[in-house]
Image 1: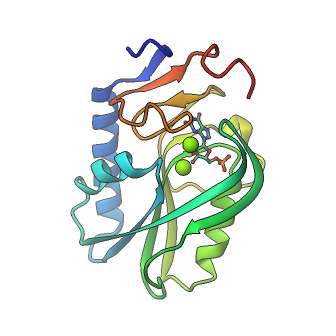
Image 2: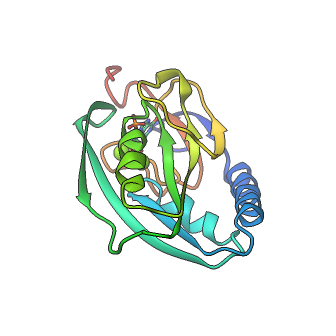
Length: 181
Ligand code: 5GP
Ligand code: MG
Ligand code: MG
């Protein structure tokens, strides 16, 4: 394990198995339809890349980048779109793919924002769910793993842009982020 980690939460093998299972479930649910996968940059990028390779219906991609004002381990509430989708989503079956739902502020905002654009359907898929910190409700249709209130990195998830390329998910040692959140 990386020396900045406290412990591994999900190994590469556990992630691979769960992501493949999620892809099969999504493929069943969207059978006969075309899917527009909307990835939230940058954290969801690794998850999305693996997930779509287990999806067997025709899948198109688009990406959106958002920033929540605040420090790197705590979001403040306000959400801002840094990079919008390239195209409209009217009449499309949209699946938002996120790395982790924490306070819910990001997805609560994005679901409202994208719903206003008139998709045929809109669902949410997240690799991780940290329900203990929820401030705003988010309906999650596909969830990889539910986790306790700990700050995790790896498999796309960062701390100050570090650790995204780790193939597993680990709990970041509190000494790395000074204990404060
Ligand atoms: P929310 O708006 O639900 O509070 O948080 C969404 C974003 O906060 C996530 O997409 C992620 O970028 C960041 N975040 C929340 N919890 C964690 C965590 O445990 N680890 C990392 N690396 N990012 C997190
Ligand atoms: Mg994210
Ligand atoms: Mg981040």
